[in-house]
Amino acid sequence: MVSRANRMQLLVDLAEQEMDRAIQTLKEIQNQRDYVQLQLNDLKAYLDEYVVKISSSGQRFMPIQLQTTQAFVEKLKQAILSQTQQVESLTETVKAAEQQWLEKRVRFNALQKVQQKLSRNEKVALDRIEQKWLDDLAAQNFIKNGDK
Image 1 (cartoon, rainbow, N blue to C red):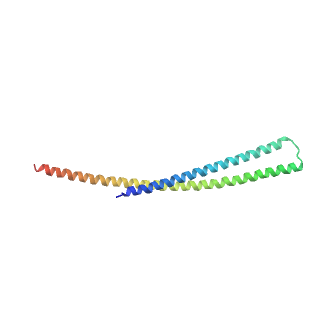
Image 2 (image 1 turned 45 degrees about the vertical axis):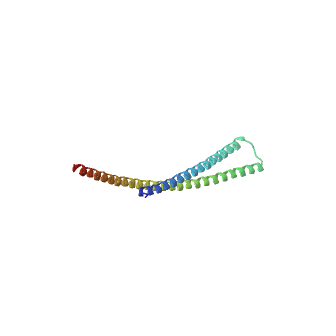
Image 3 (image 1 turned 120 degrees about the vertical axis):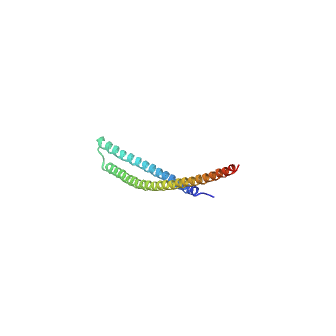
């Protein structure tokens, strides 16, 4: 017969697996966000360098060159805006994944405490049964030896 503590241990194990999956998901999303953030930082740095280079060159541009340069700067700004939105979206996803992980951790800890309590209670009950058995055995030996 499987004890209540053993059955509860199965639930604890399942809760631990869920918690482990949640932390793994959280880490993956954080890594993805960090990568996108690095790309955003690179885009911003490139734009800054490009603008400084153009500004400091002292070169006069033909209208078509100016138009092409402005279009390129606009595309960079759009890429930065898109990347910023992606970082913000992933940051929200990270927050949601953290919340999921916290909920799984709380559930795991609660189930683990219940399982530990059940184990202690079962051990106490078994100890009482064993002590009663030993007392009965000692009493039988006493009666058996007392008659002699």
